[in-house]
Image 1 (cartoon, protein in one colour):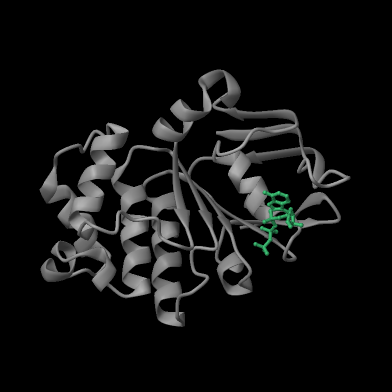
Image 2: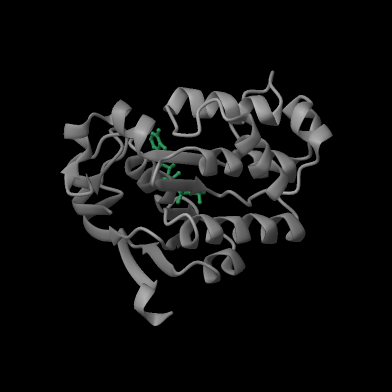
Length: 224
Ligand SMILES: Nc1ncnc2c1ncn2[C@@H]1O[C@H](COP(=O)(O)OP(=O)(O)OP(=O)(O)O)[C@@H](O)[C@H]1O
């Protein structure tokens, strides 16, 4: 579903590349963890994969088409759902309103379907009362679950998450990982997660380590 071909990136302020000539392949229906030391370039890599920044060299292809050709804003709107550590929810809305607007903005096939949005939030353990109050009144774990529910109600086949469990306790981390697995296995999406947590990485179908500017597979899909 998603491939990188000789992907190269450097920040203009840096004197050398962060990574060079990276070839990776991600398939639908699987979850992938990207791990590595702080500052190695994991966030930069997922920003490129999510179409938030442009490569300096090489290509990112989505279903065989260069995302530069698709147009990064079209790609972000139709093909990618992004989950950040700082949830990025509309803070003046309820959880339900957040899902409804995400469906409207992305033109999801569930657009306008309030019952479906409620069903997803209920599935993630939110009560009717929690769904309809301002998201800022929810706990961090609950807000993160809303951010993940948002990826489930949109049609985007690719879900990219940067440290999605970074500030969650063990119980919420577990719930979030279960959700990502469900999104990959049951909804058939491709899930790519940057994480510092070995437990989170181990529960993904594949693990890629970034070290010394190289990405190496620590666990591959076929080892499952
Ligand atoms: N906008 C920027 N301009 C210049 N340098 C940057 C910029 N963003 C990040 N960097 C540098 O690029 C390197 C990689 O950063 P990145 O955030 O991708 O690493 P990371 O592996 O995600 O780190 P962490 O695990 O701490 O989040 C770091 O040395 C960082 O200081």
